[in-house]
Image 1 (cartoon, rainbow, N blue to C red):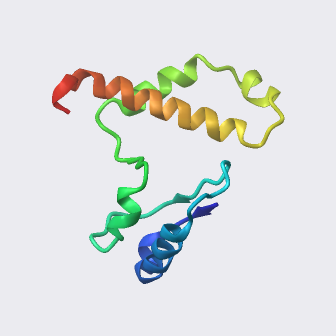
Image 2 (spheres, one colour):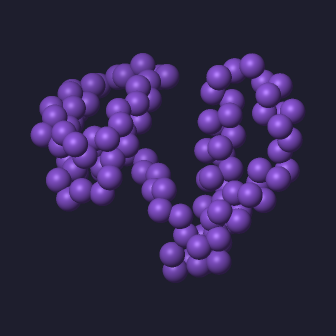
Length: 109
């Protein structure tokens, strides 16, 4: 499930937070993706139980992404018939670029 622009209805997120707290044993394949702009009103309970991905790119991220995509041919991207393949390749390339960029900060960041 993906809910986008959650910053537009922060009051409803409190209801979602209560619902999620009641779930004792969700299905093993259940995933909930939330997108939001930065807001101080976002429920802390949801944030504390979440994995967070921030799309504010550090310097050099674009270059790292280009480097990853340069190694992937268009043929490879079109060969796989699964609709999620291209978005997954993007997420993997993005994650790799972020990790590569953050390496230069070592243990301080």
